[in-house]
Amino acid sequence: MWHNGSSLGPCFRPTNITLEERRLIASPWFAASFCLVGLASNLLALRVLASARQGSSYSRSSFLTFLCGLVLTDFMGLLITGAIVVSQHAVLFDWRTVDPSCHLCHFFGVVMVFFGLCPLLLGAAMASERYLGITRPFSRPAAASQRRAWATVGLVWAAALALGLLPLLGVGRYTMQYPGSWCFLTLGPEPGDVAFGLLFSLLGSFSVGLSFVLNTISVATLCHVYHEQEAAQQRPRDCEVEMMAQLMGIMVVASVCWMPLLVFIAQTVLRNPPAMSPSGQLSRATEKELLIYLRVATWNQILDPWVYILFRRAVIQRLHPRLSSRSRSLSLQPQLTRRPTMA
Image (cartoon, rainbow, N blue to C red; front, side):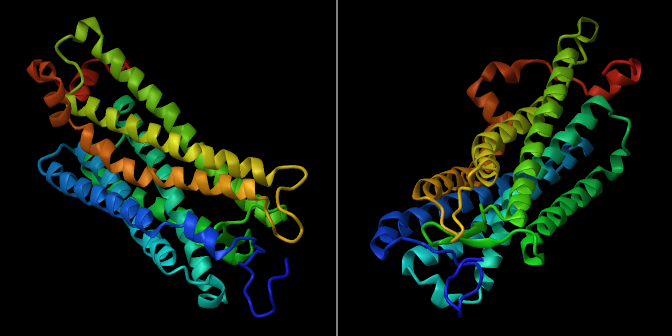
């Protein structure tokens, strides 16, 4: 354990940053604008989702339930973290004075891990739901789809929260990060820090990888049905294609935003010699890299709702009017009833 003063909690590592540097890095206007744009985007997506849920089919209702859980998660993540970060940037309060016992820092760390993992886990859950809906349409009772979707969302939230609480139980640590305005897991060489960093990184990476595999299979199945000569009049419904387009967009956004940070965490905790000194200091280059990757990851919460908003049939057909003139197509399920061996 590093020395930070006898009256301070364990979340404070030795830092080497002046108040002037913090003023240059921490812009309250940028942070506030970023949060407001994200909150407005997610509110707009929730409004569109509320209207889309009316009269939707069982399969689409289940998918929209997952989307609703994802948008709610992004909205609450921006609201909670934004309130703390914007306040800190505006006032530039000394965290050691305001929170000497590290309660706020620990809360912030739990929030960061929870709202960071939830979109990735929900993306994997949505990919699994669409994979079963497309390749195994009769394996689930349709009437229970929406209830099962909400139960799955609840399980994802519980799993992410359980992981986020591990440092409070002794596995890993939450510490103050450069430039002194946020808390996150510690990139140190201690066994607990390494284990928690790898768990966070590998679980997030596994979720992205699972989404990629399942979405690829689902898209390939849809393409097979779409181009099947004998089923020329029984192509997948527009909503099936629409859902997969939205899911692919969510997967791409999550991969671009989160994979750099996940890879960086794994590389840093496994670095030999350790990136963190025995006194608890990271090099300025490592601290700045972590801050940059974190800022890239937070774009996920803004881009997710726009994937759904822009990848809707109404928007696509307005951009490409020829798509609206093609004949109404049928569901996958009637086709699979006649040909149960096709997948």
